Every structure is written in structure tokens, then in C-alpha cells.
Length: 516
Ligand SMILES: [Zn+2]
Image (cartoon, rainbow, N blue to C red; front, top):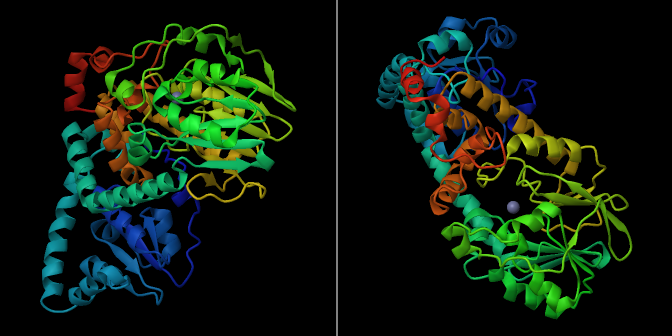
């Protein structure tokens, strides 16, 4: 399941092994070694080290003196001068390179800490391998078939858990840093707006007492987009005051109101805004169906975001195109995030108003009505468009265009097509991973863990936020939903007990003894 590593920006560039770096040879099968490499990458801001997972090709290309057996037994580091440091001495040598660990490195090379360190290292080195005989997400293995035969589920979990605890301080630290960043973006966007393209595109940031918890805790901002006279996704009832304040200040000419899909934070003010501005409401047929009547939301969502009212007539059903004040937008059906999602595309400006059809490259806590296979197909179709500006429904704009000014936390300086292709690669990798897991009848929890291998930086970096989202949404948005989103057979969300239905109790018992 893991022979094909995730396309990962941090791993993309194969190191060219410059001569002034420390080459760190580690066992890519071992969770302990992998977590040490996570620490190393975090400490090494100046790229003084190059971690290299051991393989016969790597060893022969790095230094002919290295022997596979020795390298698998303990850590080997080649210094820029060509010296080989081994085991504890290698650890101390690396620690000495970085300011936060400099003292450890210094003491670790002197009596009695050196002897103590060697003793401790010896113990871990001899015992680590028995812990590492797992398969799944935690380890990337050299001989997956071999490991699969002998791997036990409890070995996988002990290994995965160990990997987590070794990284725990890093997990907490990234959680805290991310929270501080969210706070700063929230403060800068609070009841603010962003006027772009000479006023043709305006992003109104919406707030509300309870809705504010979402951007603060999870980083998703609430917005209404005004594009050339069209108001897109006018928020939920609990954001109505904020929207109304924006409209009083800006006095925009609204000629049409469109919702990209029927999620509560996008459709709660359709009739209200229409009554206020006199502009007609346009929706896809399916969105209109979902809004008449609007199904009762789970109480967490209705309390925080607000239950939208049922849609009232009159409204118009969207065709393949819709006129704005000065041009025509293409209406493209893009299901996946939910069944009724549409996006709006302006070919003249090369601008895509994506709603929630694109939510960052590594969105990992979807809602229960996501169908990731359909989403993948939709994104593949969007890839065919010429896009220079991609506007998300939750406050991010991806563009390299110079006429869009910087706004840290909102404007992301990347080519929209590259953002889309990274997302596509990620979804394809997830699909393979999840399909392989179900083929092998692994329990869903194991498949979920294998989709978030600790060896991938973003897995542990987003861990704290993702788990907070799971907890606070009472499981409505979670990493487990990501796995589920690939196994839908129809538009109905699978019930929570589907795990037992899919794998069967007897098979689960078998799977808990042996995997594969
Ligand atoms: Zn949505």
C-alpha cells in the first residue's frame, strides 16, 4: 500500500548531495528513525543535512565504505569532511549543529554522557526493529510483501502510536503556530473587504458571534463574493448583520444572486438579499431542490452557522451561462464537495469562482456529503480551463497575477493550475491508498492512519487542528470522513456503522490477527 509515496513538495526535489552537507543515512522502514528525521528537518533551517533512506543504490552513490548491514544496525552520518560518524556519536554530532540542541551535542560527546548515550542508543537500536515490523501508513518498507506477511495489527498500532508520541512536541508546536496564524488572519479580515480588479471583484468577509469560532478554530473564513454585479453565496442567517453592514457601506449594484451549492453558510440569505436589493435569485435545479425544504441541520451546525430558511419563490434555474453587468459567466457543474455544486468561470478574465469545489490542496476533514471520486472527476474537468485567478468560497485567492495585491493569509501566490494539480495528485494517491486498504480488508481506522503517515510532514502538522475539528463538530468533519468519502456508492452518506458492514465481523477478526 505504500510502495508509491505521496507526491510531497518537501520530498519532491531529490537532493543533489552538495559536498558541504551532512549526509544522514536512516532506516526508512523504522518509525523511530523516521520521527528523528522529522525532528531533524524541523531543526535544520539552513539545510545543512540531507536525510537519505537506506538502499543499496543510495549507499553505493554516497560512500563506498558504507555497508548495508552496518547502516541498518545504527545511524550513519557522513560529515562534509568525509568522516563517518556512527550511532550515538552521529546523534551527538548532529545535535551539536543546531542552536536549540547544541548543549546536548556538546555534553553528549563528553564523559559520562557519551557512555550513557551510547548505552541508551544501543538499547533503542537493538529493540527498534521489533517495533517496526508493521505495514501501513507509518512505515515505508523496502520489502512490503515480506513485512505484510508477518505484520500484525497491534504492531502497526504500537508503531504508529510511537511515531505520534515522538513527534508530539512538534505536533503541539505546529498546532499553536497555526492557531496564531488563524488569529492574525481573522483580525485582519474581521468585517473587512477586499476590492480587486478595479472594483469588479469584491470579497466581503462575513462575521457573526458564533460563526466566528470557525475561522478562529479551523481557519475557514466566511465570505460573499461580488463579481461584476453578481452576489455569490450570501452567507448564513447568523452572518446577516455583517453582510448588511457591508452593503450599507459599499452600496453595490447587485443585479443577480447566485448560490454555488446548498450548504448552510452559502444559502441562508438568498431571499433576504433578494428582498433587499430587488435582484433575482439564480440556482441550479438540484440546489433549489435541496432548499425546498431545507433539511434540518445537525444541532452543532445549526447552532454555530445557523439553520437557513426554506427557499421561497420566485427564483430562476441556472442555465449553461449567466450574464453579469459586462460579460457572461460559464456555469459549470462540479459535484464532489456535495452533489449540487456549480462553479462560475469568466473566460475573459480567466477567473474561476470555485465556491467550495476547491478547498486548499490538502483538505483533510470533509463533511459527510463529500464524494471524493466525483470530486476528482470535477477537478479533472476544471483543469481543462485556462485559470489565472482562482477564488475559493472560504476566503482564499490563488493567483500569480500582479494586479491582485498581496494580502497574507488570503491571497496565495501560486499558479491556480498547479494548486489544482497538487490537489488532484493528493486525491489520486488517497484513492489508491484507500482502495488497497479495502481490498486487503483492513479496518477503517487502519486505512485512515495509512492515509496520514507520520513520515509526511503535513500529517502531523495538521493533526492537532484536524482532531480539534473532529471533536468540536462531534465527528461531522473528520479524517475518517475522508476515507468514507471514497466509498460512497450513491449520493446517500454511509451510516457510521458501515465499517462493520463492509468488512464483516469474522473478517475483521481475521484482519486483526493478520493483515493481508
Ligand atoms: Zn460547502
